[in-house]
Length: 90
Image 1 (tube, rainbow, N blue to C red):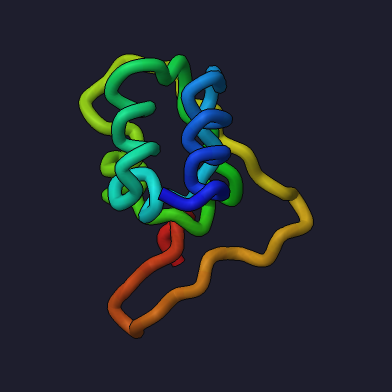
Image 2 (tube, one colour):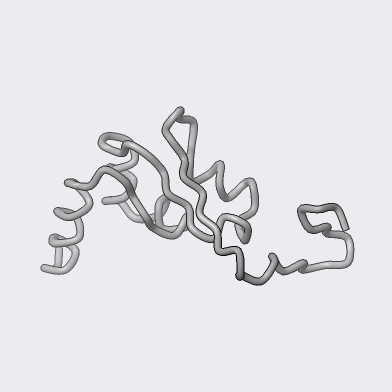
């Protein structure tokens, strides 16, 4: 294990909240251990750009507090196809 990985693992093991991209929370071993043992809450930034399934994958089967952040000046989520709808149904 490199010195950087060892340092990151040490930092993660002492935190109360994990702020990381949703894909990394399930793919990195140190984050998986942290989520299953020491986590006290979930923090999601730019939650409007996240699909519901991605949030559930990150949050998991827990009753932990979930803090959703947003930026009122941020652009709306991107619609990727003609059949998708944005949150307000338009």
